Length: 112
Ligand code: HEC
Image (cartoon, rainbow, N blue to C red; front, side, top):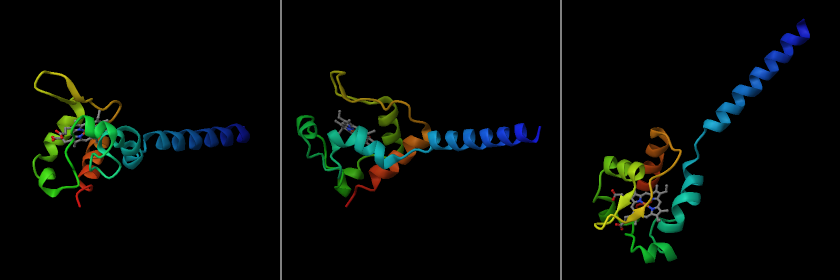
C-alpha cells in the first residue's frame, strides 16, 4: 500500500513538471523560429523576405513610435493585410494573450 502511494506521488510530480514545461513560453526562441525570417534576428528587416516585403526597420525608435502596444498585439492576433487584402504577415498560431504580450515586449526591445 505504501509503495502504491509512493508511486502515485512520483507520477503526480512527474505530471506537474511536464505541464509546467509545456506551458513555459520562450519568446526569444519563438522570435528566431517564427519572426526572424522576415524581420531579421535584430529586427532591422534585412532578410530576403524582409526586403521583398519592404519591411520597416524596427530597430529605429521612430518606427517603433508609429504604433501602440495594442496595435502590435492586434497585428499578431489578426495578422497584417495590404490594401488589396493580401496577407503581409500571418496571424500567430497557438499563442496565448500572455505569449503575445511577451512577443510585443521582445519586439519593443529591438529598438536601438
Ligand atoms: C511573412 C513575413 C513576416 C513574419 C514571419 C512576421 N512578420 Fe511581423 N510584420 C511583417 C510585415 C510585412 C509587417 C508590416 C511592416 C511594414 O509595414 O513595414 C510586420 C509588422 C509587424 C509589427 C508591427 C505592427 C504594427 O502595428 O505596425 C509587429 C509588432 C510584428 N510585425 C511582429 C512580428 C512577430 C512577433 C512575428 C513572429 C511571431 C512576426 N512579426 C512575424 C512581416 C512578417
